Amino acid sequence: MLNILWPAFITLSVIYAIIFGKVEELNEGIFNSLSNAVEFSITFLGTICLWTGMMKIAQNTSIIRKLNRLLRPFINFLFPDLKNNEIAKQEISMNMIANILGLGNAATPLGIKAMKTMQNENRKKDTLTNSMMMFIVINTASIQLIPTNVIAIRTSLNSQNPTAIIIPVWIATIFAGVIGIIFTKILIKKVK
Image (cartoon, helix red, strand yellow):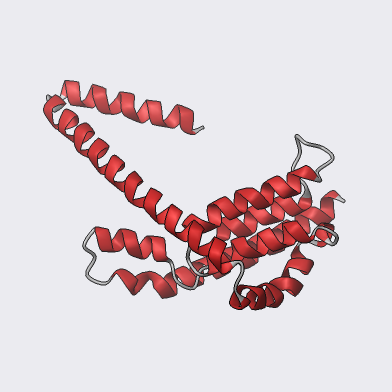
């Protein structure tokens, strides 16, 4: 769908610029956007490397082990199909901890690793398992205590109060997570 929408928007923008004599503004916007995109990408690449490394170090600390134990009943409830797959449970737990701490950049590689582990046990390689679907829902809702990425973006855009979004983020992510989990559990039961 996006591969249809984006070219359509770009085409409409170029046509509009030509018709209304705004080609110079279009060119200026393109080059400013390219510069901003490169700067933004480099900044986030550094952030991803930093937090991925921090989570790798944190995997060996007692705090992470305690958080894993705290999440264990929740993970067992959400992923009953993974009862014998401790590696997948550990990777899911690390992903959830990274998301809860607002380290979305560290959560992404951990989530990919968890999906690969679950895919290894998937009998139908072209179809998602129930656990994979639940993981996608939870990862997409991304319940966060400290939304560090959004705060960083708001800070970079000179927001007067970049942390003002914390409580709305809590409400939105918890609500999305709970509703997503409920509907996914209902759909999984209907399919079985």
